[in-house]
Image (cartoon, rainbow, N blue to C red; front, side, top):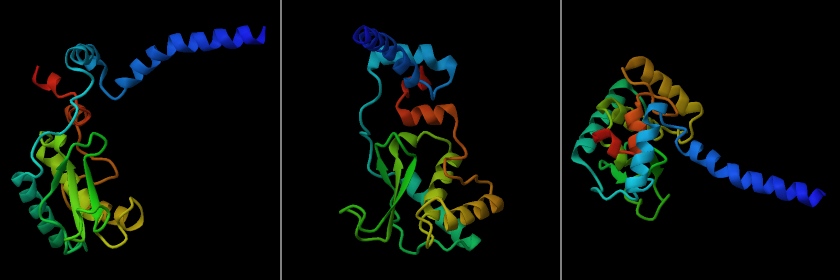
Length: 189
């Protein structure tokens, strides 16, 4: 009898699990995009597979230089040895990342490197600057984690400027989030 109950429970779970997973797949998108996303998924597959764009972008590098100038003007003690070129990655899990020297083999010339997901290049300029400033604050001594010094300086910059610096980007839209996740085709459809 117990074996029958276990088998029936497993069978029920196997029937319900695909439905639950399908709902969870689009949990981050707004409800009105769901049917369109399903059609695009059928047509193009679940996501664009990889970032095939450039490894750096002059516009983002200029923004980084301007953000460094802004931070120095505010008196934020960011590192003086930050790579002036932002590295574009294919990440779909983060907008940006600050990597200290030696964290990867290719990062040895400067003390810090900033990476931005190439999928966010179409985001608003304010969103991109928020991300760059967020990553610059990680270069403050003791600021690698989102605690203590990082929180203190993020709050300070948010109070003194138009930017909202927090653990997660403070200026995202549904289009920005969906672009990061790879659902870019519906933006142009």
